[in-house]
Length: 254
View 1 (cartoon, rainbow, N blue to C red):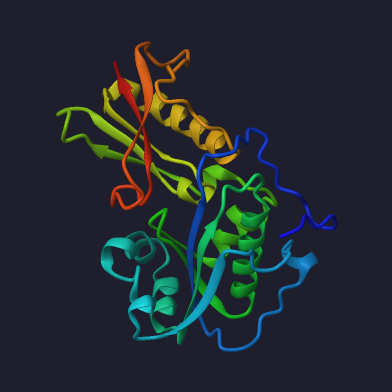
View 2 (view 1 turned 60 degrees about the horizontal axis):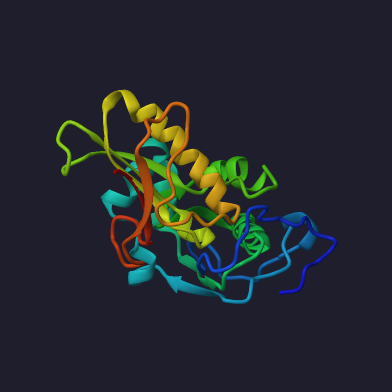
């Protein structure tokens, strides 16, 4: 889609080609049977990006039910039960899904955010992002996603802390969500308790760098003052890895 000069341009200042295709998957529940007023100025949106399909599904379909089970919806049930109940009771679900080939900027992401915000204004009651394993309430979406008026990568990737079964007594620090930017997620195993805050800081730095287009060479050494020496980056996994739904960058002690 050509660059529209009357809309804000979301740049990728670290972009290098060949990093990967951006993959997006969002689902909006609500009473969404009518037309959509996709105002360019109100929603900072040039339309549905090429490569993204939008489909409506009725309540009772498999696509509608996806994400409403306890595992995915646990946090929403706990923090916003009324929104969960509204999502379950909604008559429709709109799914936006597709790929953007090796995007040199983040205008596609700006446009998708605009479309979802317009859907919320048109009767949407909740947004599901399976890459993050997160349901968004309309209020949280507007505050953390739309109102910042920029890509805000840290709002679109989640850092998870899990027990590291491969290294007993240690934490596995890993991310989900960077598929939306066409970049690998992160996996840091064997993190000792005192290093967990540094691993989170490291992950946040990588989220920003990768989302804005950087490519990390295989074997790249980690250099951070609060992180010990001797750790390097290695590309691992596949797009169908259930832990990430993405390839990942393993940060390993060598």
